[in-house]
Image (cartoon, one colour):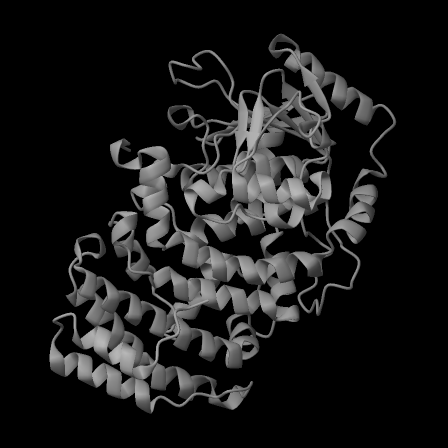
Length: 481
């Protein structure tokens, strides 16, 4: 996962970058003297954290003494990478030994459900240096993505280990499936008004169906941190509303001259904001897949949520409803990922979907886990690793798309799909969804996938290759916020 450097190589890189010799020497000496528990040993949690704190503080200070990442000479770049990967590997060793004890402490022995962002920042407060503080990440957000050294990598290491621990990982999954507090506060207003404008998302009631409409017209309805919160809130509201029996995902009308007057479903990750450093690792990628997307797939953990849930073998106790996705124009990247968790897909004739993650340099959410179930592993590999685009009329696309209709018939097709699903009542809808998941993706399978995803996505998000890919494949340097 991290670049393995022999002590001699690390010393040569750090000392060859023109850094303060005394500061570099102190850090290298502290590294050599570091002694950590090699196996779970709860009693050593705080002592090991205290021993590592000055190593992390000194290491990041050395990075800060270098020029901005994009302006470094080759020796400076090599030194910066050596420091970041050394600290990440040290964090990995610590979390491997103490992950269970850390999570118990953070959640008050599983009695306190924490969302991902609260979890990582609470960990940064309890064990400073091991994980970055909120203020450190906020300062990082002021930099272009190319100039971020990698503080968030340590968040990825920690979350990967949380997910690798069966009880902790399952507890976090169910914590993230709970309704957001703001959703509970808005529910009464939503029921009274029948619609809410959440800024980048509108949620509307049409009969017994809740419509979630993504509204980010300047960016072709791409997803970013400004859309993510409202999207999850809207899904909460549809699931919580006692009279709604189904949800619809749809894109709003956009402003782009090429598509003006048309609805666009989802342009995927907002690459402009990625390039400008405005997409956070935990606050977007992980929050999205454990919150917004997983709620579409698994529903809400409400009264049945158990604070002491010990593993993934218990029956899922969730409040869930079927979802329809209306693909107009295209479903790129994250938009395509949404098609893998809904129950029915209606596509506009001539539209397409793809997963251009390789061109971007990231992992496409949980698509690696799910796409093969629909299309088979060979096509899934072609889509994820070789940029295959699927036009909805093609035989391969019909493995994922249920209906293809002319643009002018989309409203009618949505209404007809809802009528067909609702005419016999929805008593068994939640049960059938759960029964399908028992075989296709039980909670524990998702947890194990997320253990890998959390760690690897952090490395991808902070990789120089991401910037190179965006500039090569997307002319990112010419895009403005």
